Image (cartoon, rainbow, N blue to C red):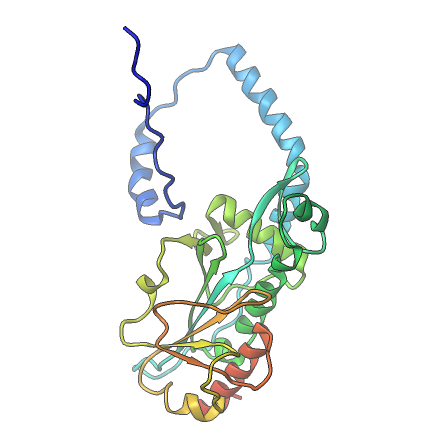
Length: 296
């Protein structure tokens, strides 16, 4: 009997979102420890060792870069804890539309950028000007190096890529200063879904489940920044009326051009009559917060 056309026997499963399931891993770990590993034949062991050696040789350069970058994360930025029993209000930064995309270039996977992969991007009909991971790098350095973070008032940092991958950056992480090491860190993060501190089990960077509103305080004010906004404000005066009793969420775009469009943003403001980079916009926000909170 011939199977009629149009009937599919095996349906392809829908692609699920990949993120670090920290709670699931902790629950499954005791179960895995009880299971015993089956014995392998000599031939099978040789085949596995040979294939593994070939993969290690191909990805040798990639692993060295990511491992060297991971070593930079084991020492965190010192945070001054408040002596007051009542926790002071803080800030949360969300970087939207970050240009962080991984692709296989040649024999290795790399974080695409407009300088090193211009020819590769043009061959694949993509605009090299859209691939600017250095914007995210500069923005994170500005946030984590700020006195607001060192005073313990930075609660969290979230980054959402153009492809919709959301990951968390702990406030005490020391991001690599050079772009090459930063690229190795992001490459390792997007492939392994998390990066753990050396000698500790703490996850410094971790891919988490969407949407970002799951992790934002319910009573927090969500402020978005855009040059096209008609509401031009003085940052110091504006934040003096907002950042008082509850945490504040600042949402900025980490792309070369365009506008962020997020439904959870409650207020869109412009802090200058001129277009500003994400890093400089963050510096003005942190400077205004430091002045209002008397952080020297």
